[in-house]
Image 1 (cartoon, rainbow, N blue to C red):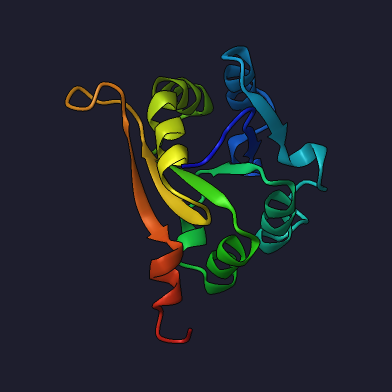
Image 2 (cartoon, rainbow, N blue to C red):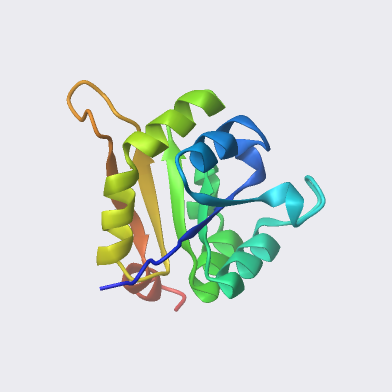
Length: 148
């Protein structure tokens, strides 16, 4: 089981600089923002993923293409990143509030799953009022890919 004394959540540029990170910080989370570490829109995903992996941070994005783009997917796995992908077409405020509602499930997921992985975070719904987190790609699954 993983130990999470003070997890650091790295917010990708697609979740903005203000609303989403502020909601997480207001909930007491330690948050790092993409643009505080990299030039906006000039840093490739493999570069920031490698940085996040070296820092031991938890990445949060809404970029589902990372799962389907080989170089980005491989960067997650090689850098050892725990990556949470927010699913749905919501604004930053809705994503932030949904993330906080789902935080117990996210922290439970982190305790039960060793990185690297890509996991989907689904916001709360009537049938799932606390939201849910589901593995999208585990390290073991990645290792079984045909080109491995």
